[in-house]
Image (tube, rainbow, N blue to C red; front, top):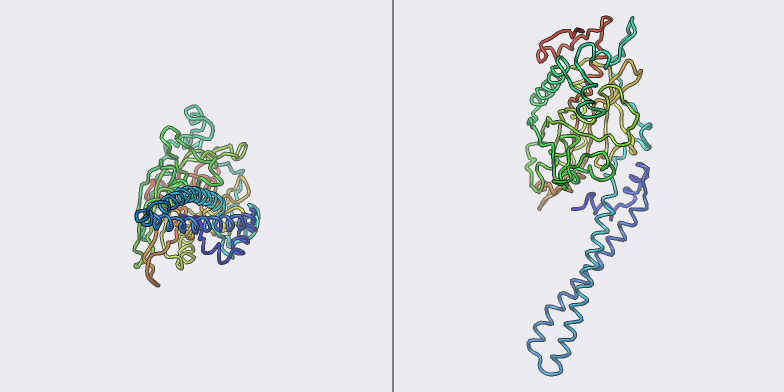
Length: 422
């Protein structure tokens, strides 16, 4: 199934070109796609015409005699060759069309800022960065004093960018993830523990084998992929199904380990657990009607902000620019927490409106409430908690003696009010 709406491509190609320009990508591909589709349609039309003639020819041959029969048989052989040729042309045109369409990211929403990674727009800033009357420690120094993280043995066992969470570190992560699941259930999400190995067609359907395939771990012997987010498994959960959205969106909260190769990040964030190959995450995922997607996106952002409020860290919300969206997203909001020792905000959550991009690939539909037949649904996702949150919690809640005050919302899950160095 096409990745983006081919009706939109035909009827409003300029909107798709504008989306490509906003992303900083080739807009000429739109005309290539339109030409490929025209070639496909022409080949199919001629193929179907000759196939119809071929079928009618069979009846004529059965009734003909003598020279007429020989002439019809010759024509039948020519038709068979032409039909085979046109079928090959139609298949080739279809393959070219499919390959070109997969190179286009989702059509961005009109409100999305134009540009790349640094062209985001700050929508809101919440809380005030803490002021310390001592030299603050970074998260790794704090975690090592608390015996919460062991990077050295992580590297010994698995290599760089791996780690052990130990003692209160493990307990802190579990408390954080349990708090996220509890909040998700409170708001009507169905909790899910998802597979972390998926088939290639599921990884591709979710949009993770397009421009960023080099960031994904592949198990070649089984042609399976390790997922970087439970979004992938949840996006494929209802593949080829017709959903009932008459009572509102269907919402899932997936808890999973996540794996990312971090290709191209050599030398970036090598200290601590900010950019690592494996982590845990609770991810919200929604199926909803297309006309409800923008409102649902704001809901997901609101639930992310609610979680950030519970861990009591200063943060800001940014509207991510088109060139930094990733292929499946039509719009994305990031919440970035203040990291005192870096003097800047770092991403803790993202929520993306993928409109029909993923559902179209997976064939996920609903009964059209405005007419007959079915139509594609929208999908959205949003982070509710990850291992990286530990960075912001430790740094923002540290005290002069190296202890860390536990945010009140986490205390029932952690069983501690203060984390103290050993």
